[in-house]
Image (cartoon, each protein chain N blue to C red):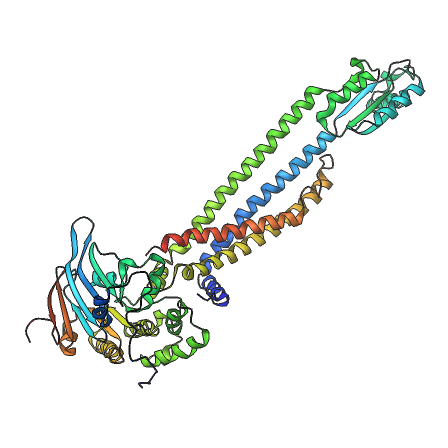
Length: 294
Length: 261
């Protein structure tokens, strides 16, 4: 049979305008669902971002023996700098170490009085690109001549951090999925109620000789339009909330590494709108099917 | 008031749209028989028999009253013809097609060959009178231009030209029933079935509705009216098929509602 797109679109929009309350309910429900999904995706992205940054901040401090020569120290420094697991190496001289120590104890300067300037050993601070490689780097450093006791890093802390972050990430993903499933069911129910209110119409259409697809198509377009509007509103809201939050956090919580690049805005918009549209259409298709059996 | 519209004088019969075709001998008999019940029984649930061994043939161009008290099986017969229900046993042939042989997806096509008028009008509440009539053409995929010319003609025929833009709840019962008849008839189906068309209407309005059905019949459409409107049946003097407890108890060519003449 001829597929008259104009007719179906007209029918869909007419129905939306003629049942404003039902349409608003469906749009709002979709918006809330997409909002939940969007906020979940944001929280996930930011938490993962923060965790990755913390992982990057894992450092190994290697103390040189007292009698190390400046040449040997430079040699070690440049060789460590060449390790693939290492993202940054800083050389801390004896004077610098004392300076740091002094500044941490700046309110009690009397403790440091009379200490010789070479009381603290020189060291290199090694920042790892990946916290999981700490053991491998430690082994290499030992081969370089460092005693095990001269390496300062806490494998256990690092392991615990990795373990905890994977739990957090999976818990967040699970919660988002759960909320999402619940809200999809809510949308389905809303659409079903709105179609249930019009089951008499569907019956009449069928009695006049309309085929199933002829009855169904305007409902699908209706679901599409409602899903699109709800999802678009929610997606824009999510993007706006994200930018406001990132700006606020970077100003107010500078010690937490929150990045505005944690999630791509385009990706977020596309996913959320696609989800809204698909859920709208599927909800309508699912609900109409029950009333078509006459 | 009566505008002449071009209508095919001969209704299309014996159109075969599915695999079933009657044997040649039966086909000749069926050519002119539009509705044919052969030993039809319909049982609801386990043992509530609505129709028992009904045999009935309605020829093309006939006007038939189906009479009987509530619960005598009139509505069941109408719903069987529309393939809204399946018979428990027996065979129904409509328009040359055996109903049990029509697959589900061809049921809409089958229904387009039968114009239907109901006691409760069954109009779409969100559509105007004209849109309701147009819908019957839209479901068949008619061109918009055809719809724009046909709908006003039909509304004129039923005398509702001025009310075309009104919604069903702005129309009186009689007017709604006229819209319903216009919708049933606009696709020029060979058969028009009316289930208690005057059940919700006062006597004066009922006369108008019956005149309309009569006029449609004269153009060549087979009309089947299920009713218990005694006066109407007695005045019209058409073929009367009387049902009682699911059985046909009387079939008279120019009958009245009751047996006495």
